[in-house]
Image (cartoon, rainbow, N blue to C red; front, side):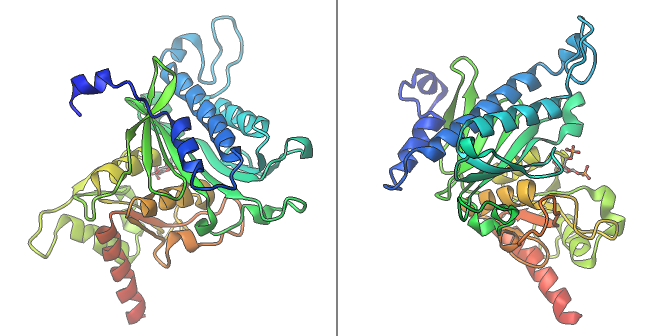
Length: 341
Ligand code: AFP
């Protein structure tokens, strides 16, 4: 559709309408998921608005400073966490919450309890806030096993049990990417309507990409397969062109580009951090779920990422995710290493 036609479009597929349509695939559904999602969307809209004002906030003191009235302001990541926790609890549809900002899991009080568990990072990439680089919220959703006996095991499940996952990127536009296990769709916030509109239907990652994305500053501590893989990206032996390097240092932005343009994002293990840096429940699992749903792959260096079973809520894991063929290549490098060992 050209720009003029786009501007004239009158049949708007909002995220709520999309999820209600999806609900039709589950005749037993009573709309609980739609309600939960609308509360997540509310949190995303709040954070989008706060992030937009963050630069100005240097004047009015939003980012942990004192404002002109002399009042102490909360840091954006703390504020975002409070908004998400309150939105999720008040939905009446959640039971256990895991947030990057809270050391312990949050068990919702019985009167407000529902059947979903949500693991989330309210503001990932927050070290990028002060320089205006894209940041995001990441979330993964599970169903509790037994509503009369809610335990931490309800969130310590393999990623294959996830019902839905997504992220919201606060960048040049605000984009929410969601999968409920039936493909991946992207929605862009129309600020004039205050609604997320379907702009990227049925996202499929290219089978092979031309970009690799990694913090090369850690190269001295990489293991042999990671070092070999990056070497091959730069000096391919098969006559193909070298890949380009792009690294923002904000997982949502790096993964969003990987999903749309193809290629690979890696945060490997290294000698200093044998489990990598990224957290299983609210970084590795949701992004791996989205990649698989878009036709890509996600691998830890040892196994399919979604088959990990975390033993603690803030566990970390190495991760290689992106285009199918690119991840296949790193898998075969790890396989040949283990056959030598
Ligand atoms: P911050 O939230 O501290 O900025 O960390 C962001 C992050 O968790 C993830 O979004 C990035 O992919 C990754 O860390 C970047 O890590 P390095 O700075 O070590 O490259």
